[in-house]
Image 1 (cartoon, helix red, strand yellow):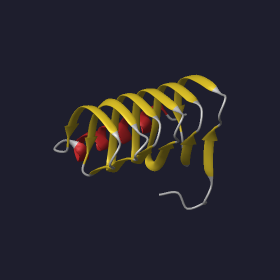
Image 2: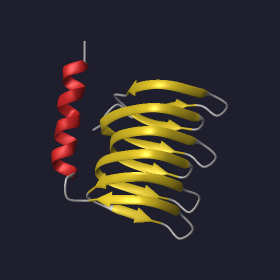
Image 3: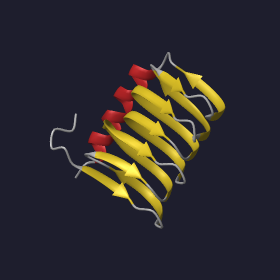
Image 4: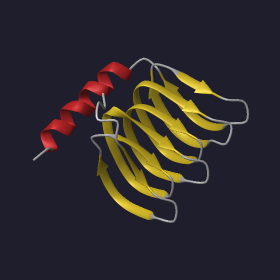
Length: 126
């Protein structure tokens, strides 16, 4: 869990491509294409922003667009402005009225998948 109270951000107007490993909560306000790995933290994708790729996080809140897959060990929340096309693996999901979702939800494999993601993240740390 993030105890420092800090939050990173991909700011509006930025288009980033690559793999991101975060050790704090993160807010996407621009566009990101790639893999985001932050198994112990919260990812927020603001309205008007987009993520294309794979996300591994503790919790995810989506107000923008996501196309890909999400593994969230605790919860995924789709706000009224969310537009999601993805495979979701999570123990809990919240779909607000107005959110658009197309894809699949797998609540059964969340703990095992989160453990594998943490292990892979530790193996790639310098």
